[in-house]
Structures are given as structure tokens and as C-alpha cells.
Image (tube, rainbow, N blue to C red; front, side):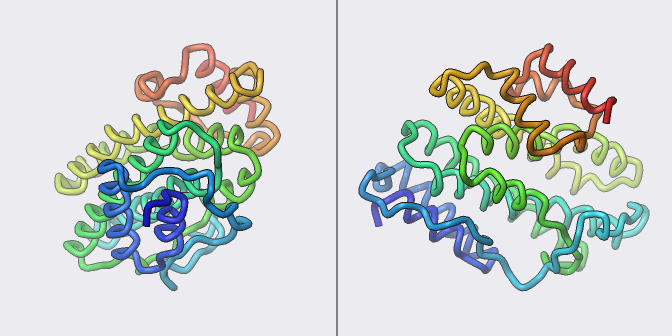
Length: 269
């Protein structure tokens, strides 16, 4: 196989998590080796649907996912599972960005294939930690918020770049330091080490979203700041949560004015 879009589809369609991870690493290695490339002859993307996933976890509305304290191994396992579910979804999100949006620069496809590769590695680290805590991916309920936003933005690359990496995935930059602090209080250094790796590398993933959102705006003659705020209002209404990790978001390409305006929107909501 030499068509990057077809390879991305194979990764998307894989239901078994270990197979999805394996195919992702194979595709990334092939892209780096120059074997895979985006082809204008590739068939048009299929309509957006659910990606390949195992039968479990059961997907429930976000408000129905129980919150557990971190004072017990079960509570810590539930937290690790929640992050693992985000990373599993992030593999699919990155590959869908490769598969769905055609005619983009080569650097765009390389960025999102690299993100998929990183997310697969993060998922594997968390799956190993889950096993150490006596659990496996699928043992706890989860929600589908990330993929639901991918479905809403399937028709427009500008909206996808704005709202998935720069809003939903960027939320991880905001909440992970608090997770690390809570885990430190219960002495879970093993999980902390994994979250520190993820936090550091997710900055680059959100930065990729910033870079390609602004590229889309320049292509279409749009002003990025106002376009971002318009998309937030159109797709999310007032459902924006703060506070924001300003240092991490600045590293990821946000500017001070954007963060000030996001803070005002979150407070108004």
C-alpha cells in the first residue's frame, strides 16, 4: 500500500485497540520512509461514520460517567481509563484529519500522522498502567464527546482544526496539571510520569491545530481570531469551560488576546 489516505482508513477502521496501535505505527514508519504519500488518485472519503472501536467501553452521555475519588486503586484506574479513552479517540481523530481532508500540503498530512503515532504510544502507556491497576480498556463507561465534534466538523477543515485540537484536545492542557497534583497527593508516581509525557507532547498536537487552522483561514481570506470565536459560538454556544493553562496554550500557538477573550467567554457562560 502506498496511498496514505487508504492507510489512514485502515487505521480508522481497526476495532481492536492493539491492532489500531500497530497499524498506526506501521503507517507512520512507512510515511517517514517515503513509502506512503497522499495521492490525488485516492477515492473520495466515505461519509463520516463511527470509527473502529471495541464493543467496550460502553458509551454513555458525559453526565452519566461517574466521578470517583483517587484514594483507591479503583478510582485511580477509572482516571487512567478516562485518559486512555481520550487517547484512543485521538488516534482516530488524527487519522480522520488525514483521511477526510484532501488537497492539503504534505506537511499537514505529516503533522497529523505524527500525532496519531504519538497518541497510539500514549494509549499503550496508559493500557499498561491500567493492567498494573488490575483493569483493561473497556472496564469503565466512557463518553463520545470528541468524536461527536469530529462528526459535526466533517464538512469543513477550518472548523475541524479550530474545534477539535484547539478546544476539545486543548482542554487536556488545562486539566492535566490538576490531575497530576491530585495524584501526587496519593503518591501515584507511575501515573504522574505518564501524564507528564502526555502533557508535554500534547502541546505540539494543539500547536498543529493552531498552525493548520490559521493556514485554512489564510487560504480562505478569513481573519483567524474572529473566525475562531465565530466557530466557537456556532458549534458550542456558551459551553466553554475554563480556567485555561495559559503557559501551555501560549506554547501551543494561542496568543494573549485570544486567551483573554476565551476567558471572558467562559466566565459569561
